[in-house]
Image (cartoon, rainbow, N blue to C red; front, top):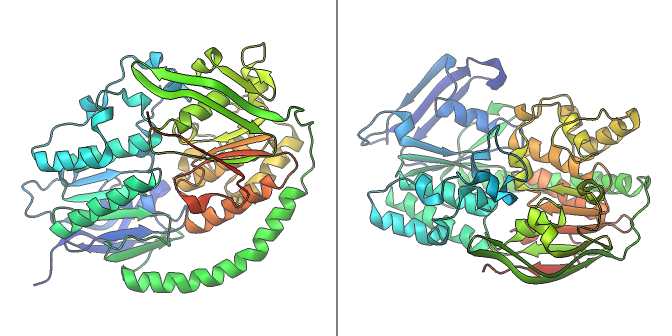
Length: 490
């Protein structure tokens, strides 16, 4: 007996041309299949998912569901979708970039326990709470969660509803290694028990979980044929080996272009870039950092690690002068003690920065090149019109990151991976002395992750450049790393 088709899309064409795929889409998903929708950044993966869940009405074609034995027929009740931006929290027009560090501005913000909802299956609830370590954050304000903790919260909330179909956009990014392993085991068990059907939206084309049965490739806004996982992986490995050889020459050319950039402003003169002396940070009764001593010297490249919630992003917010508690701490930047008369803009002038918080806050629907140009003056949005020479350097960095063709596209119409590349170009655009990259490769496809890693390595080859980088993937770190700091959760 042939399994039922839980989702059956035939020659679907969205009514709205702004969210329309290049060709009509057909996809039949059987009840015994677990699917990975894969493709490079900007390929149209999210557009396909939005069509499958009925977000966009169809102008042509047919979309049908069969959720039996579910008691309800509504897609809303049977399908839960954790989109990429959801994992950073529900940012809206009232959210601003430093809000997490100015927690007093969100005293009315709900706690985690208020938003999780109820669950009739106590065994499932306990399993999820143990997996994602939810108990310690139950009474934590949602605004204070780290990006990794937000991912855990969103996945727990979705799984507690016991959906018929769970769709997750890049579920493993932003999670520490131990949690990634446990999440894989949980999803594998759920697929084995048949209690939920899993659809993953993946940018990392070379890392398809073994519990996935079929792969649906999307490229150039065209939905390809559903393929058995084993066949897809074999074909991908063959094609990627060819591509890696082709990329080698391009990467060397990129490296040389970056090394040849002129130095247009004088570097700072201090040998010490960052010095923290016995720094402690507390929110209510919770200690994030305790008596931390840390010195970063000019030209060093640091890897900053630690499990979700250990305080990595909090530490970086102190360095970037985004955290008001920094002025009560003994911190020196570029040889100057914090709070001795320098402005926040004097500090930021030397720093290039990208982070999950920044991506979450960037809701400006400006042309992509204006987003890049905003990095020249460290603003969220463009408030000073750049000179022609400055626009030329913005175009240079967009070309380096492979997004020159997107310069006039509105930022919010880009895919999440394309947005990340724009924000990375923004971080590099002023040739900063200190480059701070917090999970910089979030949401990037296999090819762009290799490209960006090469760009970071090349940038570190420039004179007196200092790097601090956070990632939960060891293989994302550039080969130029010289020092490590591992934070432990208090």
